[in-house]
Length: 171
Image (tube, rainbow, N blue to C red; front, side, top):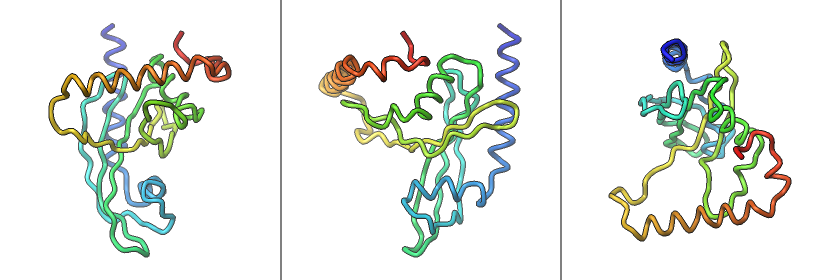
């Protein structure tokens, strides 16, 4: 167990160095689909580490300003670094790469702007930055609505044999 922890810690340290080395040239092509604009160029950005879990090597929120023909525009997205071995991480990466998360019913997954293999075997998922629209503790009605949406998702998936046959899905 401690050997596995050391590998993850080493991977997280490598990811931190790679994140700090990112520049405008690397971020611009990733930000362009966020802003639906091929002409935007990242001018400024900041990086905020978020709490990593679920096998993640690191999770970061990037935000900044890009400039294009329409002038300066704010943007934000999340980078999640995942190792190559954890089952949950592999399934998440494959789910985004397959496109299976684009047509969900009842819920919506964060949009994926890129899945990039990193030197050393890890993967980076560039995801939509979500905002909590409630900004306060959930009420019972919120939990009821969320449960109903998850039920709709499960019910819609039952009839989709092609999707259920995906080898990386949890059984």
